[in-house]
Amino acid sequence: MPDFTYIARTVTGDRASGVIEADTEAAVLRILDERRLLPVEVSRRRDRSREQRSSRVRSRDLGMFYGQLGDLLGSGVPLLRALRSIMRSSVSRRLRDLLREVHDAVADGKELHEAMRDHPETFPLLHVAMVQAGERASFLEEVLSSLADFIERLDDLRGKVRGALIYPALLTLLGTSIMLGALVFFVPRFEPLLEGVDKPLPTTVVFGLSTLVRSYWPLLLVGAVAAGLGVGVALRSGAGRSLFERVRLRVPVVGPALRMVAIARFCRILGTMIANGVPLLQALSISKDATGSRLLAARVAEAAESVRAGETLSGPLGQGDFIPPQVLAMITVAEESNQLQKVLVQIADTVDRRTHRQVDHAVRLVEPVILCLLAVAIGFLAMGLLLPIFTLAGSLGN
Image 1 (cartoon, rainbow, N blue to C red):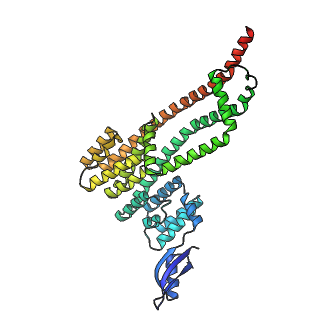
Image 2: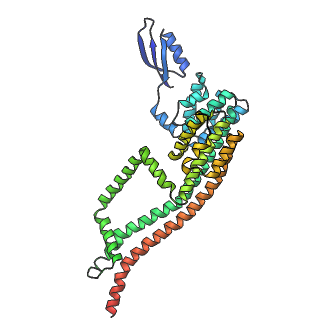
Image 3: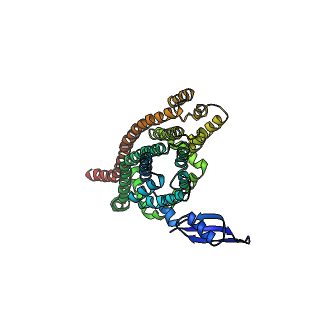
Protein backbone atom coordinates (compact mmCIF):
# COMPACT_ATOMS: atom_id res chain seq x y z
CA MET A 1 0.00 0.00 0.00
CA PRO A 2 1.57 3.34 -1.02
CA ASP A 3 2.34 6.23 1.32
CA PHE A 4 1.02 9.76 0.76
CA THR A 5 2.45 12.95 2.20
CA TYR A 6 0.04 15.75 2.99
CA ILE A 7 -0.02 19.38 4.03
CA ALA A 8 -3.28 20.56 5.61
CA ARG A 9 -4.83 23.22 7.84
CA THR A 10 -6.67 22.62 11.10
CA VAL A 11 -9.98 24.27 11.99
CA THR A 12 -7.99 26.94 13.80
CA GLY A 13 -5.82 27.62 10.74
CA ASP A 14 -2.69 25.91 12.00
CA ARG A 15 -0.48 24.01 9.53
CA ALA A 16 -0.34 20.22 9.78
CA SER A 17 1.66 17.71 7.75
CA GLY A 18 2.44 14.03 7.81
CA VAL A 19 2.32 10.70 6.01
CA ILE A 20 -0.77 8.51 5.49
CA GLU A 21 -0.77 4.96 4.14
CA ALA A 22 -3.74 4.45 1.83
CA ASP A 23 -4.74 2.83 -1.46
CA THR A 24 -5.57 6.01 -3.38
CA GLU A 25 -5.44 9.78 -3.03
CA ALA A 26 -9.22 9.82 -2.58
CA ALA A 27 -8.85 7.61 0.48
CA VAL A 28 -6.31 10.06 1.92
CA LEU A 29 -8.79 12.90 1.45
CA ARG A 30 -11.46 10.93 3.32
CA ILE A 31 -9.05 10.26 6.19
CA LEU A 32 -8.16 13.96 6.38
CA ASP A 33 -11.84 14.87 6.42
CA GLU A 34 -12.42 12.45 9.28
CA ARG A 35 -9.59 14.16 11.15
CA ARG A 36 -11.19 17.54 10.43
CA LEU A 37 -8.20 18.71 8.42
CA LEU A 38 -8.48 20.87 5.29
CA PRO A 39 -6.08 19.45 2.67
CA VAL A 40 -3.72 21.89 0.96
CA GLU A 41 -1.44 19.44 -0.85
CA VAL A 42 -1.49 15.66 -1.14
CA SER A 43 1.15 13.72 -3.09
CA ARG A 44 2.32 10.15 -3.33
CA ARG A 45 5.67 9.56 -1.67
CA ARG A 46 8.11 8.12 -4.18
CA ASP A 47 9.59 4.69 -3.57
CA ARG A 48 13.17 4.88 -4.81
CA SER A 49 13.44 1.17 -5.53
CA ARG A 50 10.19 1.27 -7.48
CA GLU A 51 11.33 4.29 -9.46
CA GLN A 52 14.54 2.53 -10.36
CA ARG A 53 12.62 -0.53 -11.52
CA SER A 54 10.27 1.61 -13.55
CA SER A 55 13.14 3.48 -15.17
CA ARG A 56 14.46 0.19 -16.53
CA VAL A 57 11.33 -0.85 -18.39
CA ARG A 58 12.47 -2.12 -21.77
CA SER A 59 11.34 -0.18 -24.80
CA ARG A 60 10.06 -3.40 -26.38
CA ASP A 61 7.81 -4.02 -23.36
CA LEU A 62 6.63 -0.43 -23.53
CA GLY A 63 5.79 -0.78 -27.22
CA MET A 64 3.87 -3.98 -26.50
CA PHE A 65 1.92 -2.16 -23.76
CA TYR A 66 0.94 0.62 -26.17
CA GLY A 67 -0.19 -1.90 -28.77
CA GLN A 68 -2.25 -3.93 -26.31
CA LEU A 69 -3.83 -0.84 -24.77
CA GLY A 70 -4.73 0.51 -28.20
CA ASP A 71 -6.35 -2.81 -29.19
CA LEU A 72 -8.38 -3.00 -25.97
CA LEU A 73 -9.58 0.60 -26.21
CA GLY A 74 -10.46 0.09 -29.86
CA SER A 75 -12.59 -2.91 -28.83
CA GLY A 76 -14.58 -0.78 -26.37
CA VAL A 77 -12.87 -1.86 -23.13
CA PRO A 78 -12.82 0.96 -20.52
CA LEU A 79 -9.40 2.41 -19.74
CA LEU A 80 -9.16 1.24 -16.12
CA ARG A 81 -10.22 -2.29 -17.03
CA ALA A 82 -7.75 -2.32 -19.91
CA LEU A 83 -4.92 -1.24 -17.62
CA ARG A 84 -5.80 -3.94 -15.07
CA SER A 85 -5.96 -6.57 -17.80
CA ILE A 86 -2.53 -5.65 -19.21
CA MET A 87 -1.11 -5.44 -15.69
CA ARG A 88 -2.26 -8.99 -14.88
CA SER A 89 -1.03 -10.48 -18.15
CA SER A 90 2.35 -8.71 -18.29
CA VAL A 91 5.38 -10.94 -17.76
CA SER A 92 7.58 -7.95 -16.86
CA ARG A 93 7.56 -7.17 -13.15
CA ARG A 94 8.88 -3.67 -13.80
CA LEU A 95 6.06 -2.94 -16.21
CA ARG A 96 3.48 -4.31 -13.74
CA ASP A 97 4.78 -1.99 -11.01
CA LEU A 98 4.61 0.94 -13.39
CA LEU A 99 1.11 0.11 -14.63
CA ARG A 100 -0.11 -0.23 -11.05
CA GLU A 101 0.93 3.36 -10.35
CA VAL A 102 -0.58 4.59 -13.63
CA HIS A 103 -3.81 2.73 -12.85
CA ASP A 104 -4.03 4.24 -9.36
CA ALA A 105 -3.44 7.74 -10.74
CA VAL A 106 -6.16 7.31 -13.37
CA ALA A 107 -8.50 5.91 -10.72
CA ASP A 108 -7.88 9.07 -8.68
CA GLY A 109 -9.24 11.16 -11.54
CA LYS A 110 -6.15 11.95 -13.58
CA GLU A 111 -6.12 11.57 -17.34
CA LEU A 112 -3.80 9.00 -18.87
CA HIS A 113 -1.27 11.54 -20.12
CA GLU A 114 -1.14 13.15 -16.65
CA ALA A 115 -0.44 9.78 -15.06
CA MET A 116 2.27 9.13 -17.65
CA ARG A 117 3.83 12.54 -17.00
CA ASP A 118 4.50 11.46 -13.40
CA HIS A 119 7.03 8.92 -14.74
CA PRO A 120 9.34 10.85 -17.09
CA GLU A 121 12.03 8.21 -16.69
CA THR A 122 9.80 5.78 -18.61
CA PHE A 123 7.43 7.89 -20.68
CA PRO A 124 9.29 10.49 -22.77
CA LEU A 125 7.72 13.86 -23.46
CA LEU A 126 7.08 12.69 -27.01
CA HIS A 127 4.79 9.88 -25.81
CA VAL A 128 3.01 12.09 -23.29
CA ALA A 129 2.28 14.79 -25.87
CA MET A 130 0.90 12.29 -28.38
CA VAL A 131 -1.33 10.63 -25.79
CA GLN A 132 -2.56 14.04 -24.65
CA ALA A 133 -3.47 14.97 -28.22
CA GLY A 134 -5.23 11.62 -28.67
CA GLU A 135 -7.27 12.10 -25.50
CA ARG A 136 -8.32 15.60 -26.49
CA ALA A 137 -9.32 14.63 -30.04
CA SER A 138 -10.88 11.25 -29.07
CA PHE A 139 -8.60 9.02 -31.15
CA LEU A 140 -6.41 7.63 -28.36
CA GLU A 141 -6.36 4.08 -29.74
CA GLU A 142 -4.89 5.31 -33.06
CA VAL A 143 -2.21 7.25 -31.19
CA LEU A 144 -1.27 4.21 -29.10
CA SER A 145 -1.03 2.05 -32.23
CA SER A 146 1.22 4.68 -33.84
CA LEU A 147 3.44 4.72 -30.75
CA ALA A 148 3.70 0.93 -30.76
CA ASP A 149 4.73 0.92 -34.42
CA PHE A 150 7.17 3.79 -33.84
CA ILE A 151 8.92 2.02 -30.94
CA GLU A 152 9.08 -1.24 -32.90
CA ARG A 153 10.82 0.47 -35.82
CA LEU A 154 13.35 2.17 -33.56
CA ASP A 155 14.05 -1.11 -31.75
CA ASP A 156 14.58 -2.93 -35.04
CA LEU A 157 17.06 -0.33 -36.26
CA ARG A 158 18.86 -0.23 -32.90
CA GLY A 159 19.05 -4.02 -32.78
CA LYS A 160 20.38 -4.19 -36.33
CA VAL A 161 23.15 -1.70 -35.59
CA ARG A 162 24.14 -3.44 -32.35
CA GLY A 163 24.07 -6.87 -33.96
CA ALA A 164 26.17 -5.67 -36.86
CA LEU A 165 28.84 -4.29 -34.51
CA ILE A 166 29.24 -7.44 -32.42
CA TYR A 167 31.63 -9.21 -34.82
CA PRO A 168 33.93 -6.18 -35.36
CA ALA A 169 34.02 -5.58 -31.60
CA LEU A 170 35.00 -9.21 -30.97
CA LEU A 171 37.71 -9.00 -33.62
CA THR A 172 39.11 -5.85 -32.03
CA LEU A 173 39.06 -7.37 -28.54
CA LEU A 174 40.68 -10.61 -29.71
CA GLY A 175 43.38 -8.85 -31.72
CA THR A 176 44.24 -6.49 -28.86
CA SER A 177 44.44 -9.39 -26.41
CA ILE A 178 46.75 -11.35 -28.72
CA MET A 179 49.08 -8.40 -29.20
CA LEU A 180 49.26 -7.62 -25.48
CA GLY A 181 49.83 -11.28 -24.65
CA ALA A 182 52.63 -11.52 -27.20
CA LEU A 183 54.34 -8.35 -25.90
CA VAL A 184 54.11 -9.48 -22.27
CA PHE A 185 54.85 -13.23 -22.47
CA PHE A 186 56.33 -14.05 -25.89
CA VAL A 187 58.67 -11.21 -26.83
CA PRO A 188 60.72 -11.28 -23.56
CA ARG A 189 61.88 -14.83 -24.42
CA PHE A 190 63.73 -13.48 -27.47
CA GLU A 191 65.55 -10.65 -25.69
CA PRO A 192 68.35 -12.84 -24.15
CA LEU A 193 68.86 -14.64 -27.47
CA LEU A 194 69.30 -11.40 -29.40
CA GLU A 195 71.16 -9.42 -26.77
CA GLY A 196 74.43 -9.04 -28.69
CA VAL A 197 72.94 -8.88 -32.17
CA ASP A 198 72.45 -5.73 -34.20
CA LYS A 199 68.74 -5.09 -34.14
CA PRO A 200 66.87 -3.58 -37.07
CA LEU A 201 64.25 -0.88 -36.51
CA PRO A 202 61.23 -3.26 -36.31
CA THR A 203 62.98 -5.32 -33.64
CA THR A 204 63.89 -2.23 -31.63
CA VAL A 205 60.28 -1.02 -31.79
CA VAL A 206 58.88 -4.40 -30.72
CA PHE A 207 61.29 -4.74 -27.80
CA GLY A 208 60.60 -1.15 -26.74
CA LEU A 209 56.85 -1.73 -26.77
CA SER A 210 57.29 -4.93 -24.75
CA THR A 211 59.39 -3.13 -22.14
CA LEU A 212 56.91 -0.28 -22.00
CA VAL A 213 53.92 -2.58 -21.44
CA ARG A 214 55.69 -4.77 -18.86
CA SER A 215 57.39 -2.02 -16.87
CA TYR A 216 54.89 0.80 -17.02
CA TRP A 217 51.53 -0.98 -17.25
CA PRO A 218 50.17 0.76 -14.08
CA LEU A 219 50.91 4.17 -15.61
CA LEU A 220 49.41 3.09 -18.93
CA LEU A 221 46.30 1.85 -17.14
CA VAL A 222 45.96 5.09 -15.17
CA GLY A 223 46.52 7.08 -18.35
CA ALA A 224 43.84 5.12 -20.19
CA VAL A 225 41.37 5.64 -17.33
CA ALA A 226 42.22 9.35 -17.13
CA ALA A 227 41.81 9.71 -20.88
CA GLY A 228 38.45 7.96 -20.71
CA LEU A 229 37.30 10.20 -17.88
CA GLY A 230 38.52 13.26 -19.75
CA VAL A 231 36.60 12.28 -22.85
CA GLY A 232 33.52 11.62 -20.71
CA VAL A 233 33.76 15.06 -19.09
CA ALA A 234 34.23 16.70 -22.48
CA LEU A 235 31.21 14.87 -23.90
CA ARG A 236 29.04 16.19 -21.05
CA SER A 237 29.56 19.73 -22.29
CA GLY A 238 27.62 21.05 -25.25
CA ALA A 239 30.75 22.12 -27.13
CA GLY A 240 32.39 18.72 -26.60
CA ARG A 241 29.37 16.80 -27.84
CA SER A 242 29.05 19.04 -30.89
CA LEU A 243 32.75 18.61 -31.73
CA PHE A 244 32.53 14.84 -31.28
CA GLU A 245 29.48 14.69 -33.53
CA ARG A 246 31.20 16.72 -36.26
CA VAL A 247 34.19 14.37 -36.18
CA ARG A 248 31.95 11.31 -36.15
CA LEU A 249 29.91 12.51 -39.13
CA ARG A 250 33.10 12.91 -41.19
CA VAL A 251 34.04 9.24 -40.83
CA PRO A 252 33.61 7.59 -44.24
CA VAL A 253 30.53 5.38 -44.61
CA VAL A 254 29.77 5.49 -40.86
CA GLY A 255 29.17 9.26 -40.78
CA PRO A 256 26.52 9.30 -43.53
CA ALA A 257 24.74 6.36 -41.91
CA LEU A 258 24.55 8.18 -38.55
CA ARG A 259 23.33 11.31 -40.30
CA MET A 260 20.52 9.42 -42.00
CA VAL A 261 19.52 7.75 -38.73
CA ALA A 262 19.04 11.18 -37.13
CA ILE A 263 17.08 12.46 -40.14
CA ALA A 264 14.81 9.39 -40.18
CA ARG A 265 14.15 9.72 -36.45
CA PHE A 266 13.29 13.41 -36.80
CA CYS A 267 10.97 12.88 -39.77
CA ARG A 268 9.16 9.95 -38.18
CA ILE A 269 8.68 11.69 -34.82
CA LEU A 270 7.51 14.95 -36.37
CA GLY A 271 5.25 13.28 -38.91
CA THR A 272 3.70 10.94 -36.35
CA MET A 273 3.00 13.75 -33.90
CA ILE A 274 1.46 16.05 -36.53
CA ALA A 275 -0.67 13.19 -37.84
CA ASN A 276 -1.93 12.56 -34.30
CA GLY A 277 -3.05 16.12 -33.66
CA VAL A 278 -0.03 17.62 -31.88
CA PRO A 279 0.44 21.31 -32.85
CA LEU A 280 3.39 21.92 -35.17
CA LEU A 281 5.35 24.17 -32.80
CA GLN A 282 4.98 21.74 -29.90
CA ALA A 283 5.90 18.84 -32.21
CA LEU A 284 9.04 20.67 -33.37
CA SER A 285 10.04 21.39 -29.77
CA ILE A 286 9.71 17.73 -28.79
CA SER A 287 11.25 16.26 -31.95
CA LYS A 288 14.23 18.61 -31.56
CA ASP A 289 15.22 16.88 -28.32
CA ALA A 290 14.56 13.39 -29.68
CA THR A 291 16.73 13.47 -32.81
CA GLY A 292 19.91 12.35 -31.03
CA SER A 293 21.91 14.94 -33.01
CA ARG A 294 22.86 18.35 -31.64
CA LEU A 295 23.55 19.68 -35.12
CA LEU A 296 20.12 18.68 -36.40
CA ALA A 297 18.51 19.91 -33.17
CA ALA A 298 19.99 23.37 -33.82
CA ARG A 299 18.48 23.37 -37.31
CA VAL A 300 15.09 22.29 -35.92
CA ALA A 301 15.18 25.04 -33.27
CA GLU A 302 15.77 27.62 -35.99
CA ALA A 303 12.96 26.06 -38.03
CA ALA A 304 10.59 26.40 -35.06
CA GLU A 305 11.40 30.11 -34.80
CA SER A 306 10.80 30.43 -38.54
CA VAL A 307 7.39 28.76 -38.26
CA ARG A 308 6.51 30.94 -35.26
CA ALA A 309 7.28 33.99 -37.40
CA GLY A 310 4.98 32.72 -40.16
CA GLU A 311 7.75 31.54 -42.49
CA THR A 312 8.49 28.11 -43.96
CA LEU A 313 9.87 25.07 -42.17
CA SER A 314 12.21 23.97 -44.95
CA GLY A 315 14.30 27.17 -45.07
CA PRO A 316 16.23 26.79 -41.79
CA LEU A 317 16.42 23.01 -42.20
CA GLY A 318 18.39 23.49 -45.40
CA GLN A 319 21.15 25.46 -43.68
CA GLY A 320 24.34 23.68 -42.73
CA ASP A 321 24.07 20.91 -45.35
CA PHE A 322 22.92 18.42 -42.71
CA ILE A 323 19.76 17.34 -44.55
CA PRO A 324 20.32 16.09 -48.14
CA PRO A 325 18.82 18.24 -50.94
CA GLN A 326 16.41 15.50 -52.08
CA VAL A 327 14.94 15.16 -48.57
CA LEU A 328 14.70 18.93 -48.26
CA ALA A 329 12.92 19.14 -51.62
CA MET A 330 10.32 16.62 -50.45
CA ILE A 331 9.69 18.62 -47.27
CA THR A 332 9.29 21.82 -49.31
CA VAL A 333 6.73 20.20 -51.62
CA ALA A 334 4.90 18.73 -48.62
CA GLU A 335 4.59 22.16 -47.03
CA GLU A 336 3.21 23.64 -50.24
CA SER A 337 0.65 20.82 -50.64
CA ASN A 338 -0.29 20.72 -46.93
CA GLN A 339 0.68 17.04 -46.72
CA LEU A 340 3.57 17.44 -44.30
CA GLN A 341 2.62 14.65 -41.87
CA LYS A 342 2.17 12.08 -44.66
CA VAL A 343 5.32 13.00 -46.55
CA LEU A 344 7.47 13.05 -43.39
CA VAL A 345 6.51 9.46 -42.54
CA GLN A 346 7.21 8.43 -46.15
CA ILE A 347 10.62 10.14 -45.93
CA ALA A 348 11.34 8.25 -42.70
CA ASP A 349 10.43 4.92 -44.34
CA THR A 350 12.65 5.66 -47.34
CA VAL A 351 15.56 6.86 -45.22
CA ASP A 352 15.23 3.80 -42.97
CA ARG A 353 15.65 1.50 -45.96
CA ARG A 354 18.69 3.46 -47.14
CA THR A 355 20.11 3.45 -43.63
CA HIS A 356 19.82 -0.32 -43.38
CA ARG A 357 21.83 -0.61 -46.59
CA GLN A 358 24.40 1.89 -45.38
CA VAL A 359 24.79 0.04 -42.09
CA ASP A 360 25.36 -3.21 -43.99
CA HIS A 361 27.97 -1.51 -46.18
CA ALA A 362 29.66 0.05 -43.17
CA VAL A 363 29.88 -3.29 -41.39
CA ARG A 364 31.21 -5.00 -44.52
CA LEU A 365 33.87 -2.30 -44.69
CA VAL A 366 34.77 -2.34 -40.99
CA GLU A 367 35.40 -6.10 -40.85
CA PRO A 368 38.14 -6.25 -43.54
CA VAL A 369 39.71 -3.04 -42.22
CA ILE A 370 40.03 -4.58 -38.75
CA LEU A 371 41.39 -7.81 -40.19
CA CYS A 372 43.95 -5.87 -42.24
CA LEU A 373 45.05 -3.88 -39.19
CA LEU A 374 45.43 -7.07 -37.17
CA ALA A 375 47.40 -8.68 -39.97
CA VAL A 376 49.70 -5.66 -40.20
CA ALA A 377 50.26 -5.61 -36.42
CA ILE A 378 50.98 -9.35 -36.19
CA GLY A 379 53.15 -9.19 -39.31
CA PHE A 380 55.17 -6.31 -37.85
CA LEU A 381 55.61 -8.29 -34.61
CA ALA A 382 56.76 -11.38 -36.49
CA MET A 383 59.10 -9.35 -38.67
CA GLY A 384 60.63 -7.68 -35.64
CA LEU A 385 61.41 -11.06 -34.07
CA LEU A 386 62.48 -12.97 -37.19
CA LEU A 387 64.67 -10.38 -38.96
CA PRO A 388 67.57 -10.53 -36.47
CA ILE A 389 67.35 -14.33 -36.40
CA PHE A 390 67.64 -14.47 -40.20
CA THR A 391 70.53 -11.98 -40.06
CA LEU A 392 72.27 -14.04 -37.38
CA ALA A 393 71.76 -17.28 -39.31
CA GLY A 394 73.16 -15.69 -42.48
CA SER A 395 76.26 -14.43 -40.69
CA LEU A 396 76.88 -17.86 -39.17
CA GLY A 397 76.48 -19.46 -42.58
CA ASN A 398 79.15 -17.21 -44.04
